[in-house]
Image (cartoon, rainbow, N blue to C red; front, top):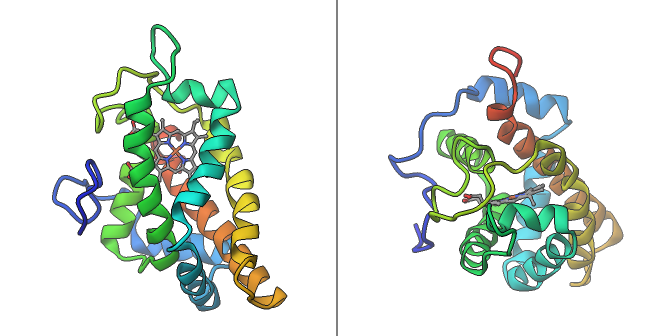
Length: 195
Ligand code: HEM
């Protein structure tokens, strides 16, 4: 456990995911995610763990450069970026990079995925940081961000001398993991019974 404010992975305050581990097994099969991907993600852990801040600089730069994305981190009434909110979320985002590359896909992980989904949706957004921001990260942006997040990660995966094949495997594993996670995060956005 670490001391990142609002990072509640593995704590009692996180509610049970409505998605079962069995459902998640099927999701893994749907995206062709297997043990090779787990290994590739672990390989990437050794790379990304020392580059978290540099990776976040790229991702935050991307979000900050697009007003419609920055809006989700801005004041609900005045539309001005909320520095404290951006900074608090950034710490948890950094932890997410480490978690994604070392995930064990157990019940606690699944439950925290649901919590992250809630934090993007109106049922949970802003609550963790008491941020006076917009009510919802629109789903259309959430899903689309999978591409820039994984595309811009690739150069980091390649910068420490791994073979082209390993870089490809690590990149594919990150794409699959992000697809799985954002699909889990979609739960609060999807009509009851349709997930
Ligand atoms: C929170 C990742 C898409 C806006 C977070 C957190 C992570 C994350 C790890 C912190 C979770 C925690 O509290 O532990 C991602 C990933 C995305 C994505 C991987 C896409 C692949 C987006 C998009 C936006 C966005 C498109 C809109 C610009 C936010 C906001 C929060 C947040 C506002 C804070 C929510 C709160 O109030 O707690 N995101 N995100 N995210 N993200 Fe995203």
